[in-house]
Image (cartoon, rainbow, N blue to C red; front, side, top):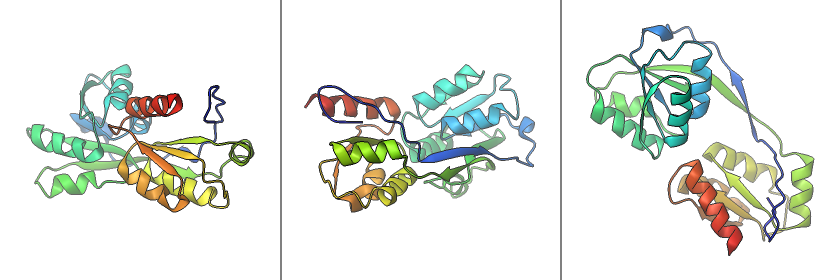
Amino acid sequence: MAVGREINVVLSPLLETVRLESDIDLSSFETIVFSSANGVKALAENRPATGAVAYCVGDQTAAAAAAVGYRTISANGSARDLAELVAKLWSGEKMVYACGRSTAFDLAGFLAARCVPIEVAVLYDQKPLKINTEAKIAASEESCLFPVYSARTGRILAREVRSISDNSHVVACMSESIAEEVSPLRWKSVVAGRPDAESLMETIIRWHLI
C-alpha cells in the first residue's frame, strides 16, 4: 500500500493455506476453540456446526464461526486471552482446538498446565510464499505501508524485502510480537491498539491521514 493522498493497493500473499486431514473424530466434541478464521473454514469442511459452542480469539473469527452455525464466545484479544477465557469458563465439556500446524502460542499447553483437557486437531498448514513482482516494484518506487497480521508473516516479510534499502516504508503490525519480527528491517512500525483486524485497519487509516 503506497502512503499518500491516494492509496494504491497491491496484494502479495506471503502464506498459502493448505488443508490437512485429521484422524480425530471431530463430531464427538461439544465445544470448539478457534484461534483464527482459517480454523473455522477448515473445520467447516469436516463437520457441521450443529449449534456447538465455539470459543474464538476475536470478533472476526467469531463472525466467521457464527456464519457457519456456531454459538460463539469471543475473547476479543490474543491467543493467550483466548486460552485464559477457556480456562475460566470451562465446565467439564469435551473440547477440541481446531488450528494450523504453526501456532505462535501454545494454547493446548497453557490449558494443560491448568488441568483443562483439550484435543488438538491440526486441520491446515500455511506454506510461505515469495513477495510478488508487483509489490517489489511498488516498494522500489515509492514509500509503502505493509499491513502484517501474524508473527510468521512478519518473519517472511523481513526475509523477502531485506535487500530493499529504502527506509521510508512503514509496517502496520497487529501486535508487538509482529513488530519484533520485522525490526531487522529498521523500518518504522506502528502497532494496533488491539490484536484484531479492525484495530489494525483503524491504525492504517490513522497513519494514512497523518
